[in-house]
Amino acid sequence: MMRWGSSGQAADSFYQVRPDCSHNVPDTKFKIKAGKTLSVRKWHAAFSRQGCLDIASVLSRIQRGGVHPAIRGEVWERIQYARWKEECKAMDSHVGSGKIITAPIITEDGFPIMDPLVLLEATSDNNTSQGTSTSTGNGIEVDSTNRVTDKQVIDWKLTLHQIGLDVLRTDRSMVFYENKENLSKLWDILAVYAWIDKEVGYCQGMSDLCSPMIVLLNDEADAFWCFERLMRRLRGNFRCTEQSIGVENQLQHLASIIQVLDPKLHGHLETLGGGDYLFAFRMFMVLFRRELSFGDSLYLWEMMWALEYDPDIFSNYEETGTATHKIEGLKPKVKSIRRFGKYERENMKNGPNDGDGPVPISVFLVASVLKENSTTLLQEARGIDDVIRILNNVTGNLDAKRACAVALKLHRKYLKKLQGKKT
Image 1 (spheres, rainbow, N blue to C red):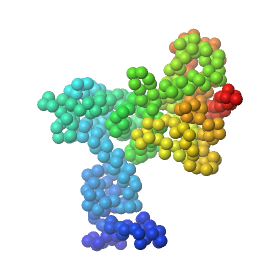
Image 2 (tube, rainbow, N blue to C red; image 1 turned 60 degrees about the vertical axis):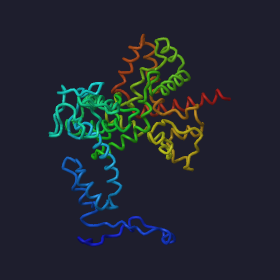
Image 3 (cartoon, one colour; image 1 turned 90 degrees about the vertical axis):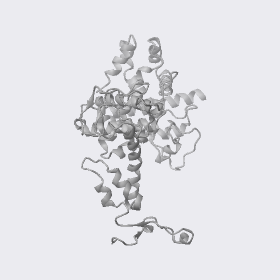
Image 4 (cartoon, helix red, strand yellow; image 1 turned 135 degrees about the vertical axis):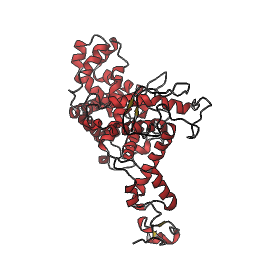
């Protein structure tokens, strides 16, 4: 047992070295010291009953004696998120306060808007004023009129009220979100993500993707990292310019698939002015969250991930998470094809469909919805509004398991037709 004032316990046992290499490896100088090293007990004691981390006490311990190896991974995960959250809180103290902004707090020119019209009551925050929390002491560039001059900070602050409005609309039928602390967790995570991913920021629909992480994972940092990992796959959907939208490639793939598998339906949609398939935009953006119940949408997600599972998938993403497909021609590192999902195995057998690599399974899921409603669309749709109405009627009637089964069937049929054209 460690005693106060002792030289400390060696940490070598946590990172064992092979006996034949021991003479080539430097001795570990790090010692686990009582009263200095952040211990398991002190780490757990740093959390309040509401799960809030006392970051100051934790940082003090780490600076004096590091982190106990038994909890190092857990601490690192939370410290990184906590650092970003503290950075955001310095720019606007509503972050982490338990309050949700639902009205603009800054103008596009950087001037603070006092007395926001809507604030969701939550835990009190003595440091939060009625307006913004900008000051020259928190690292934000302001002029003599208290105007924020940093364009990135202005852009971020302009999104905070939109995040709040979307949070209040997200899964509002769930008892879970009657607890205001859960709402503020969702808002905090989205606010932090909007700051660290400045290229994409926050876009409508992200709250639908993040909400399941809050519900499933009690720890806010865990929920953030799961959401961040999901966004590495999906953030391309949210990257829009004046010339294009993020899901444009998937919409084009969908048009090509319907043209091959149901040319009559494709022709009818083109006649109605829906050849760009923008009416399917929402399904791609939020992965059927609006078409299914909360539980069924999670069921669909896990089936999708299992079907297109690739053991090497994350090694194919850029560090910033901009890739949405595998790198063309990259050979799998895992030898056994059984380690891959059923959908992915079909792609591996047939090779890439085009220069962009394999089409995501979500495209075939949307195609399955269109095929299942093909007769109704052909008979009743006389305009794009009718197409949207018919697809909206899918809400509550979509069977996740059947949708996956039909998507796989369409995928095989599509690949077969493509192979037929090549021969």
